Amino acid sequence: MNFRKGQGREDPEINLIPFIDVLLVILIFLMVTTTYSRFTELQITLPTADAEKAQDKINQIEIGIDAQGRYKINSQAVSFLDTATLANDLKQVVSTMESAKDGTQHDPVVIINADRAATHQSVIDVLEAARIAGLAKVTFAAQASAKSK
Image (cartoon, rainbow, N blue to C red):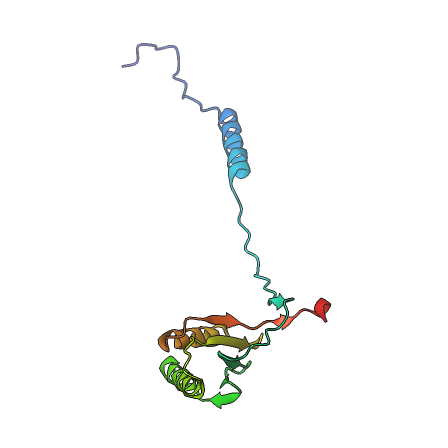
């Protein structure tokens, strides 16, 4: 039923220029408000200490860890199977220290001397073994800085 016989019907036309303008404004807004996070590699420098070395070595257990993951307790090599065996070795060292002392009981300090190339897991194994052995005082040894020499 076309009541307008002389006129042809025009198809509606969508004007794309305002649509493109609105999209460009939205794109600029999103680019400005978006935060771009950039991940960088961690640069870790091992600690150095300038304090004077303590002279008192009565109640301390020194644990050395080399780059290959070998352990030494008070300069004696121990074989590492798991943290429980390392904890037993620490308990034996504590018992020999207590039998050599004169009745005064003090908790020994565990000093961890880890090589800078030693794995993090090997240090965590020593911390776990000290916890199992009941040794609460743990510290790390650091290399003296070059300016203090």
